[in-house]
Length: 149
Ligand code: FES
Image (cartoon, rainbow, N blue to C red; front, side):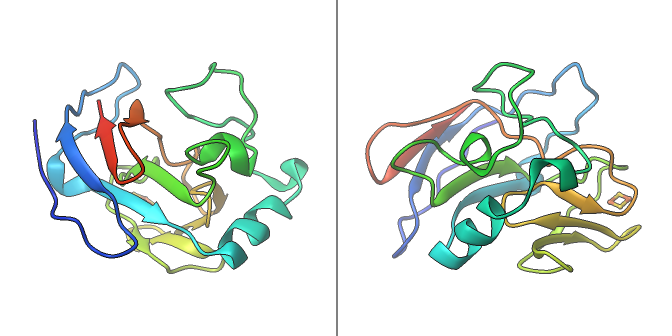
Protein backbone atom coordinates (compact mmCIF):
# COMPACT_ATOMS: atom_id res chain seq x y z
CA UNK A 1 0.00 0.00 0.00
CA UNK A 2 1.45 3.36 -0.95
CA UNK A 3 0.46 6.92 -0.19
CA UNK A 4 1.70 10.45 -0.60
CA UNK A 5 0.86 13.49 1.50
CA UNK A 6 1.57 17.05 0.42
CA UNK A 7 3.96 19.01 2.64
CA UNK A 8 2.31 21.33 5.14
CA UNK A 9 4.02 23.61 7.62
CA UNK A 10 5.30 21.64 10.63
CA UNK A 11 4.73 18.37 8.86
CA UNK A 12 6.87 16.01 6.86
CA UNK A 13 6.17 14.47 3.51
CA UNK A 14 5.67 10.75 3.42
CA UNK A 15 7.17 9.41 0.23
CA UNK A 16 5.83 5.91 0.44
CA UNK A 17 4.06 3.61 2.78
CA UNK A 18 4.32 -0.12 2.84
CA UNK A 19 2.01 -1.17 5.61
CA UNK A 20 2.55 -4.76 6.52
CA UNK A 21 0.27 -6.71 8.70
CA UNK A 22 2.49 -8.06 11.40
CA UNK A 23 2.35 -11.44 13.03
CA UNK A 24 0.99 -9.78 16.14
CA UNK A 25 -2.49 -9.48 14.70
CA UNK A 26 -2.37 -5.79 13.90
CA UNK A 27 -4.72 -4.52 11.25
CA UNK A 28 -3.28 -2.26 8.61
CA UNK A 29 -5.25 0.04 6.33
CA UNK A 30 -4.15 3.35 4.97
CA UNK A 31 -7.00 5.00 6.84
CA UNK A 32 -5.61 3.72 10.11
CA UNK A 33 -2.20 5.19 9.56
CA UNK A 34 -1.41 8.29 11.58
CA UNK A 35 0.81 10.73 9.68
CA UNK A 36 3.92 11.66 11.68
CA UNK A 37 2.97 13.86 14.59
CA UNK A 38 5.09 16.89 15.38
CA UNK A 39 4.82 17.16 19.15
CA UNK A 40 5.18 20.34 21.14
CA UNK A 41 7.94 20.76 23.69
CA UNK A 42 5.30 20.60 26.41
CA UNK A 43 4.02 17.28 25.09
CA UNK A 44 7.56 15.89 24.99
CA UNK A 45 8.32 17.08 28.52
CA UNK A 46 5.08 15.64 29.85
CA UNK A 47 5.91 12.26 28.33
CA UNK A 48 9.47 12.37 29.63
CA UNK A 49 8.27 13.15 33.14
CA UNK A 50 6.27 9.93 33.28
CA UNK A 51 7.90 7.24 35.38
CA UNK A 52 8.29 3.97 33.51
CA UNK A 53 6.74 2.20 36.52
CA UNK A 54 3.53 4.10 35.82
CA UNK A 55 3.19 2.63 32.35
CA UNK A 56 0.73 -0.14 31.68
CA UNK A 57 2.92 -1.48 28.85
CA UNK A 58 6.64 -1.08 29.66
CA UNK A 59 7.85 -1.89 26.11
CA UNK A 60 8.56 0.62 23.36
CA UNK A 61 6.70 -1.40 20.68
CA UNK A 62 8.97 0.29 18.16
CA UNK A 63 9.76 -1.89 15.12
CA UNK A 64 13.01 0.03 14.69
CA UNK A 65 14.34 -1.07 18.08
CA UNK A 66 14.91 -4.31 19.96
CA UNK A 67 11.73 -5.97 21.22
CA UNK A 68 12.74 -5.50 24.85
CA UNK A 69 13.45 -1.77 24.56
CA UNK A 70 11.69 0.09 27.38
CA UNK A 71 8.98 2.60 26.52
CA UNK A 72 10.93 5.76 27.24
CA UNK A 73 9.81 8.85 25.41
CA UNK A 74 12.99 8.74 23.32
CA UNK A 75 12.35 5.13 22.31
CA UNK A 76 8.84 6.06 21.23
CA UNK A 77 9.97 9.09 19.25
CA UNK A 78 11.91 9.34 15.99
CA UNK A 79 15.11 9.32 18.06
CA UNK A 80 17.91 11.69 19.02
CA UNK A 81 17.50 15.06 17.37
CA UNK A 82 14.00 14.20 16.19
CA UNK A 83 12.32 13.69 19.54
CA UNK A 84 9.49 15.94 18.43
CA UNK A 85 8.37 13.45 15.78
CA UNK A 86 6.38 10.37 16.56
CA UNK A 87 5.30 7.87 13.88
CA UNK A 88 2.64 5.32 14.78
CA UNK A 89 0.03 3.00 13.41
CA UNK A 90 -3.28 4.49 14.49
CA UNK A 91 -4.89 1.25 15.54
CA UNK A 92 -5.99 0.77 19.12
CA UNK A 93 -4.28 -2.27 20.59
CA UNK A 94 -7.49 -3.42 22.24
CA UNK A 95 -9.78 -4.38 19.36
CA UNK A 96 -8.52 -2.26 16.50
CA UNK A 97 -10.57 0.94 16.52
CA UNK A 98 -8.98 4.20 15.39
CA UNK A 99 -8.05 6.43 18.34
CA UNK A 100 -8.70 10.18 18.22
CA UNK A 101 -5.70 12.49 18.42
CA UNK A 102 -5.12 15.18 21.04
CA UNK A 103 -7.75 13.63 23.23
CA UNK A 104 -8.11 11.63 26.40
CA UNK A 105 -6.93 12.04 29.96
CA UNK A 106 -3.25 12.16 28.97
CA UNK A 107 -3.49 14.58 26.05
CA UNK A 108 -2.42 12.03 23.46
CA UNK A 109 -4.95 9.72 21.85
CA UNK A 110 -8.28 8.40 23.01
CA UNK A 111 -10.08 5.36 21.68
CA UNK A 112 -13.82 5.99 21.89
CA UNK A 113 -14.77 2.35 21.35
CA UNK A 114 -14.03 1.16 24.89
CA UNK A 115 -12.18 4.05 26.48
CA UNK A 116 -8.45 3.49 26.15
CA UNK A 117 -6.29 6.53 26.81
CA UNK A 118 -2.82 6.99 25.33
CA UNK A 119 -0.31 9.63 26.32
CA UNK A 120 1.64 12.05 24.11
CA UNK A 121 4.11 9.28 23.30
CA UNK A 122 1.29 6.89 22.28
CA UNK A 123 1.72 4.77 25.40
CA UNK A 124 -1.43 3.25 26.82
CA UNK A 125 -2.19 4.68 30.24
CA UNK A 126 -5.76 3.67 30.98
CA UNK A 127 -8.48 1.43 29.61
CA UNK A 128 -8.55 -2.07 28.14
CA UNK A 129 -5.82 -1.64 25.48
CA UNK A 130 -2.98 -4.00 26.41
CA UNK A 131 -0.12 -2.39 24.47
CA UNK A 132 1.24 0.96 23.40
CA UNK A 133 0.36 2.10 19.88
CA UNK A 134 2.66 0.33 17.43
CA UNK A 135 5.51 2.16 15.75
CA UNK A 136 6.26 0.86 12.24
CA UNK A 137 9.62 0.65 10.51
CA UNK A 138 10.42 4.10 9.24
CA UNK A 139 13.36 6.31 8.34
CA UNK A 140 13.76 10.00 7.73
CA UNK A 141 15.11 10.37 4.21
CA UNK A 142 15.69 14.08 4.92
CA UNK A 143 14.45 16.62 7.45
CA UNK A 144 11.14 16.82 5.62
CA UNK A 145 10.66 13.38 4.14
CA UNK A 146 10.01 10.14 5.96
CA UNK A 147 9.81 6.69 4.43
CA UNK A 148 7.54 4.27 6.20
CA UNK A 149 7.68 0.57 5.67
S1 FES B 1 -10.83 -0.88 20.53
FE1 FES B 1 -9.91 0.80 21.54
S2 FES B 1 -10.53 0.58 23.59
FE2 FES B 1 -11.41 -1.12 22.58
